[in-house]
Length: 134
Image (spheres, rainbow, N blue to C red):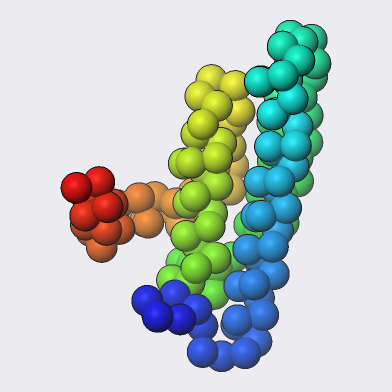
């Protein structure tokens, strides 16, 4: 609420919370699936199977649900919320931690792709990240 990303309207807040819960559940599923095969077991067959499950089942199922819920141009309509930032975080930081292995095909989900592209180009976010890295 302090930075203006939490909606004032209780119904919009509920929807944003629900979207964030969906994204967080996907992040948990991602790390539950990848951590053992990336850092502990080193089983290449299991690693490929896990990646295929995430890339061909988990991510498409989740992205389809999120695409249906996006009101455009952001999840809650005309105003950015913390739910939009969570989507960017999923795409860039969590899936992005496994380049060439995990893939979010945002081209198949134009509303989600637009949210990520808009936030990625945001001058405010760029300034925030630049300030954090100083």
